[in-house]
Length: 97
Image (tube, rainbow, N blue to C red; front, side, top):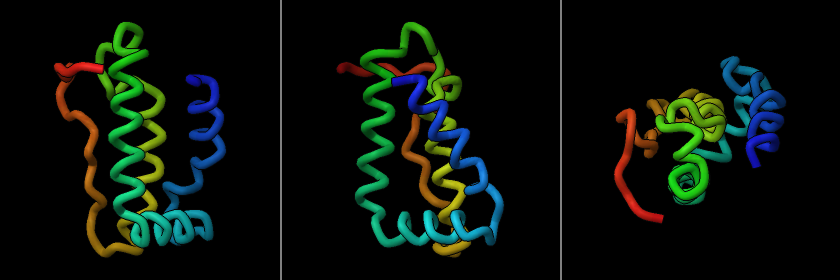
């Protein structure tokens, strides 16, 4: 799973560049499908919490967090405001699988 996250993130790096075709397309997708992306964010956090918390004590160090940040960076141009970040802000998050 980690290898897949790293490859996807590397391939989508151009999303962070405002005005590019990919940035606009992905941004529009997120704006048109906010519930889908919110669910995706929750699932990435849950997967980290269940399977990778031992290896990555902080969610911010987990490759899934980086990928969510890259995807989220595409939305503000289309939405007109920063896209909500549903990921944990602290160094550790208590919770259950």
